[in-house]
Length: 195
Length: 156
Ligand SMILES: [Zn+2]
Image (cartoon, rainbow over all chains, first blue to last red; front, top):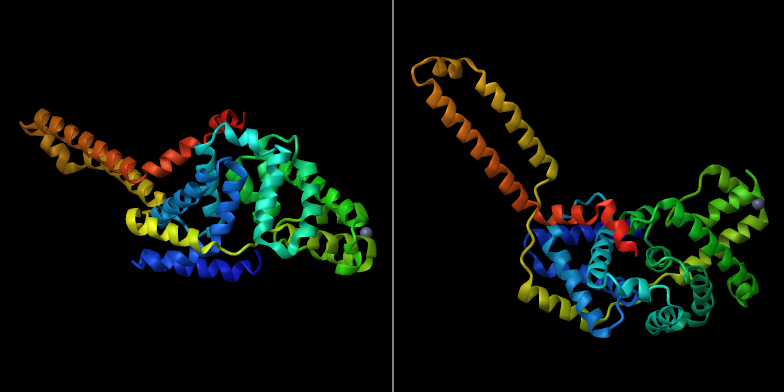
């Protein structure tokens, strides 16, 4: 997620507009964040119908509680917290089962990939490195590492959301990035990226 | 700054974190660490999920909101409520020990005034707490859900 500051300003403007009675201003927020909310659903819920319903549920909650968004943090992070809590409440048992299962993770990755066809090969290689780091971790921690890389959430935001301490998270990001470095050392994109 | 320190900073870099001058200086001077920083930046960018919205899902969400979405209202800040409660609590002893009140108690009506004032204060506090809970139901619920004991329970 690039150009965060500009995007945050746009979010605030949309929120103000909704709170001033323009219901349709919410559409901009749904358009911007539906992919990220779907990504949380894909990572936490096994059944497809659940995931479609999940996206609706998350945005409906966000809409209803929009007046409680304080504006001190990012709207994106606030929304992701709603998504995470909703996912936890929906499947208290499903998350530990699916989040660290390599087969499930590959499916998730595949679903993400379909939406971004032009980045396929690079992502595959790097994704394998991440899976190497998170397979076998406790579910909460595995999800936290994914939230960092895939959703671009910050340490503090993830810690507030999942309860995983910042330092624990940092040490796993450190390890995952070491694996990424190895992956990059062996890969063919040295020339491609001129690194 | 040593290479190890610089690499640790690169490998634990937060989203959009800007390095301080010491790290920058090291990266400028050291091609090996600079290369690492560039690679990690590339990896971060490639891994990031950046797909476009699914128009069907967006329409479905907006349709649900149009149909069921209770219109959001601005929340009154928790702080304002707590200040109100604190004010109420400090005002009570002040009233209770004020001169007019003492005068009333001294008159023939004393015990009856005392009783009715106590009842009024009690009802006031109950009403305040009821409105507080009603207005903050969701937030109180979220706070209870996030209690450390519940979190540990959820992890396994
Ligand atoms: Zn160095």
